[in-house]
Image (cartoon, rainbow, N blue to C red; front, side, top):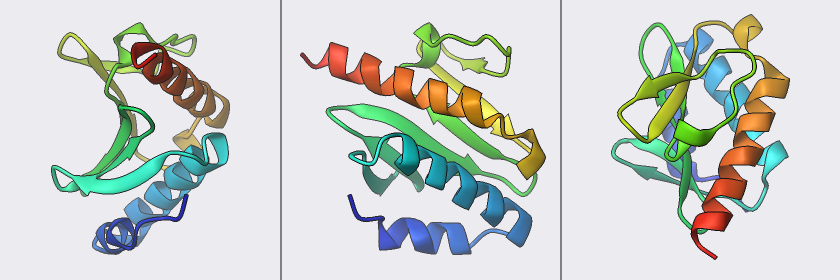
Length: 119
């Protein structure tokens, strides 16, 4: 899937350190699941396959990688935080904090949950 020019614009609005985290997470998302559709919804990048899978959100201090149906995701490293009964997210404050293996695992599992929910 091609990357969204709207997400490129969204990313460019952030400070360089936050922008690098966004680019890294975005690259991991597409490296893990290249068939995800990327768009802007609710003023943030959203990644969908059959339904909503993940999103990015950014502040001046961190980037959030969120999972719409994240309540059932495995979390062996204890990095996923709760948000309501269904959604879960990971806050990344620095590039060195990205646990690539854990992020890839969460993305794969979130895609599997999405596919199972829409079968």
